[in-house]
Image (cartoon, rainbow, N blue to C red; front, side):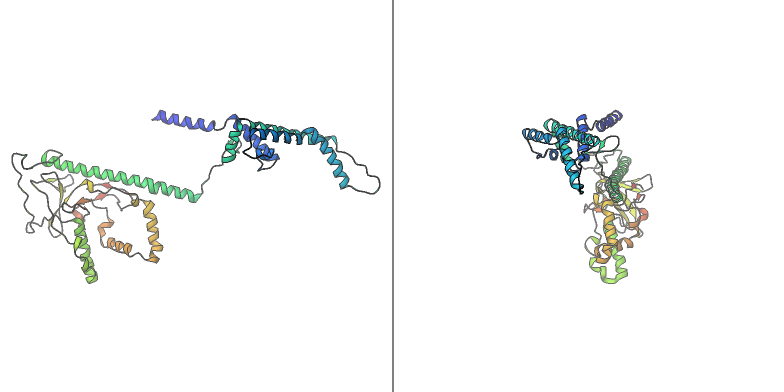
Length: 407
């Protein structure tokens, strides 16, 4: 890995050093001279008074015509003649007027300027008639780099404070936060899978946990007794149903008949199929009681405030995979909207969910382990009696951060 990184760094460095060739530097220097003496927006084609799509014959013809106009000898004669005319027009006095011609110093300056213009014209014609025309057209289309003291560089985009803040929010609030959620999700699955395997190994001596299947073992497994209310009420109640039932009961006590219409459906606890076949109880490292049935399902046994024992299936497949909608990239704008515009427009759905969370104190504590109801196959959460349940340690506000699973 290190040799590859070193090679990549050297490659980038040499690429930056050798960004421009010798011919490119000549084009850049000639273009700067033309812009300084002929005009900032004057191109090589403008100097020859031709179009950018002119062919070689047209370029040669235009060069010859232009070179005759700015030849030093012709410029010298024209300068002397025009100088005398300009002086005669500027000074008109009565009597005898003596027109003096330009001094030798002025003539030399004009000739020197004509020589420089003729040399630039010759270089421009050579560029357009040679292989450098393709490079010049490339820079003319995409822009010329500027001289920065040590070389020619393109003017880079300098983002402002707002652009930097938006970029950091996209990177850390979106990508980094999503990566953290995925990491926490994987660790949760590994943790639950490890406890399930340990429970199976302790119960049956095998991580697969298959035991008591009729027709395979020498002795058929005894069926589990039917759950009875008199024996402690070990009814496999859906956690989500129990939570919703408790919530509706609280609302019924507070608001009367407002929640009476919602006391049916998923809010009503239903008796579900519990573990089957031969079962064994295993005490986990943290003191929790786990039940392993003959087909390898692992249940968490709990006892509520009324003394009823309940069993909850532990299933790593029901630990939901995080999505991008749970990251700060989506959560923060929604939260800001609800706190500002949402208060004015009114969001009854959001307000109802907020009130539900306020009534359920465990929602503000670490989130319980998700499991699957054996009958419904749906993702469930723990009820409000949180003292005897599996919880995720650390701050685990949904969608805000990731947490480590623990008992």
